[in-house]
Amino acid sequence: MLSTLTSIAILFSIPYNTSVQTKRIKLIPSGENYVFKLNTKGVIITGTYDVTYNNKTYNPNEKDIRKGDTIIEANSKKISNINDLSNLIKDSSSLNLKIKRKNEILKRELPIYKINNISRSGLYVKDRVIGVGTITYIDPSTMIYGGLGHEVVDNDTNSIVDLSSGEIYYNDVISITKGSNMHPGEKVSNTSLKESIGNVLINSSYGMFGKYYRSISNSRTYEIAYKNEIKKGKARVLTCVKGNEVKSYEIMITSLKKQDENGTKGITFKINDSELLSIAGGVYSGMSGSPIIQNNKIVGAVTHVLVDDIQYGYGIYIDNMYNKQISK
Image (cartoon, rainbow, N blue to C red; front, side, top):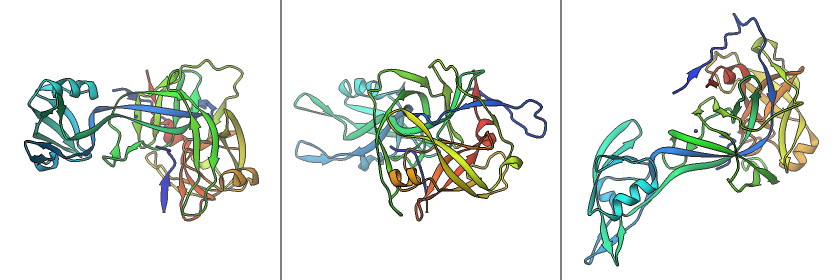
């Protein structure tokens, strides 16, 4: 059983073809813990409730308006956030909605009932997704960062978050809840979401990418490893398990899959480091994006835990991830 490791975002790609690459890309491996806030395109319905009016009970489900639907328009007006929707609800007796359900665009009518001078829609909604992860690298030439190594999926729609904008924030790790097989550990952290350290421009199956705002100095750069240079055997993972200190822990790469640039689980590894095992029990939630180093090169990033045996995890090849980064 697999599990992603995110605790709970129109630019152009930079092609990265190892067969024609003449100059080695150098990146700063991070391992820094961060919180991301992704603002969704539209407003996601997280649930519905009964509204009782004139001794009759109504629920939006009766109009085929469901949990997981995304409201993108109401009364011919674009809906970008909860305030947009709330302003229309308080001044209307009904709303003509345009909703997105998976790959379909549907039209539905939503009655609004005013009870004790309060407008009731029968909907619970949200316009953002918040989670915790790890920054994989920062490109010192562009200040573009890559993190997570996989997509952020919304729990209500079970699909990749359709991103309108996003920010990342500094985040201290308070502790790691130690895990066991079938129950991976989890990062416990704290942030105020006040001082942004970067934005989020892309949320994709290869990771999260954006511009890093903080200044960086005296940070060592590492070359990207080509797939044919990565070997089974000892490697290191950089991650943060307490405060803001990034430490290096020993792992063993046990398997390497031959994959094209679209592969996301090419590396299988086992945590050997006794200190990390004593703290977390193995790979833990919130570790996604932790960079993997071998022979002084960045070779990949942690993406998943093997739930049946949490000492084992999976990683994406760094050139697969970097190939999807963005430029602005």
